[in-house]
Length: 195
Image 1 (cartoon, rainbow, N blue to C red):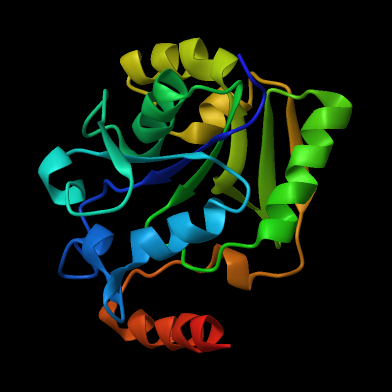
Image 2: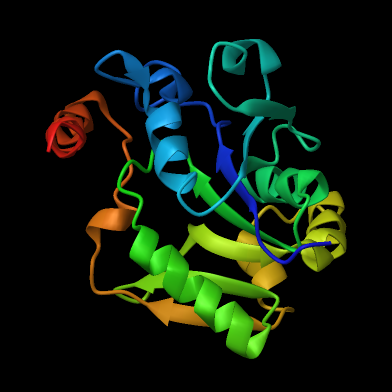
């Protein structure tokens, strides 16, 4: 199995604060998911969308993968990503995190090449950012065990794994869209696309 190549965008969640399905957010005429995936294609050749509804991803550019642990939150999505991967390490992000930083992703790849941890997790202002991270497929069993035991926190798996934490000063890459009032931030993406 090759070491890198798979990136996964998690498209689950209830989107209750947004008021509509966040995986359907658009930037101009494009789905935000396709914009995020387009950036990730500069590093990865296998972009997957983990979803609880394959029909909603059928109109998007990337292949949908049905969540193997529906209702289990991001930890269930990561488990599904690990099971669907065709590479040893999987980069994981979310459909509501529009500011992908390719330099930071390359930095994490360098850490994996040098140290071979089980996961590389971003950290900002002391807070973990587990949806801007790499996980090794070898962690799937630990995720499954925790989830079947009713533990939905990603940190429960990280606590028992070899993890390298990367501190980041740029907090913009961790911004996510939770409310409709957050949507004007997408204007920055439109500006970047024009330049």
